[in-house]
Length: 385
View 1: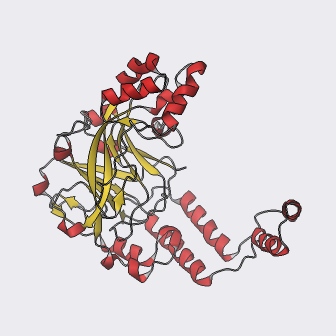
View 2: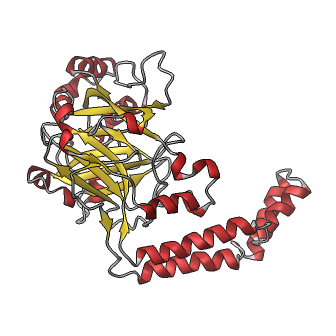
View 3: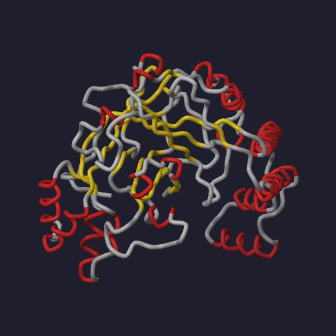
């Protein structure tokens, strides 16, 4: 999604792309947005309420740590997890013998060596050499998830945003609260079924100084000490007690253009605007850490407000339970609240979620719910390349 520092940069970019005829319509659909650059710092040195990802959250005194309730109908999830365990214990061929031989013939005709053919045959028959330690770890991880999903379990902290400080910037979305701190948590052990949101958002309508830093629950620390993503055994250097970093979020103001324009124009113009979206443009806002700053960090695609930077399709369409589609650019009841990239630097106090990867999570909320500050109604979608 193109983001520009100001309206003048947007108009100049459209002029260069030969899209002057659509400049007024596109300009009317933009929304202010804050793009963030992460800068890794010691979590314990960050002031309370600092906008950051990872680390220990700052919460109101007395607020219980956010929890995910036990699944109301866990049967389908349990069946899926049991099947994964069975597949590890008794691996089966992924193809029939006939299909395997056809594939090997094609590989042989392409010049594959005998060794390559033997390795492929064993892999397709489920006869690849197993790693007993890895298999045992994954089975234990799947069994632990079966237990955790059927009981109340703590959510993992993702990010917090100091809205009072950010609201002074020109890229701050005026539909958002102009005070307080927004906290974002996630069910790190749940599967993304496309129906139940994995994220929970809390708005603390207080000044940051009223918050208190909170340690992660022991259950999450122990989980992180035992497993990384997909049930792989955690390494000693990944022990929770050694994780000391958080990512300070450095904001950059811009104007965001909705992705809806990529398919909204007549056929004779669609190629030009598609190219405008896809090709790099020096006029676009692409924030980075300042020159000479050697701290781990960078632009991971984190943003507050504005329009979502879609990867696969319109996030607004995906979260709408009625399946309604956008019929005109900017015409949607859904608003982009926050999105973030799934990757992060080593050393961060952060937990690997099951339903994630190197793509982006988009948190969306209806206009009417945002106006009423009903953040419990946030929905989410994950997209990757």
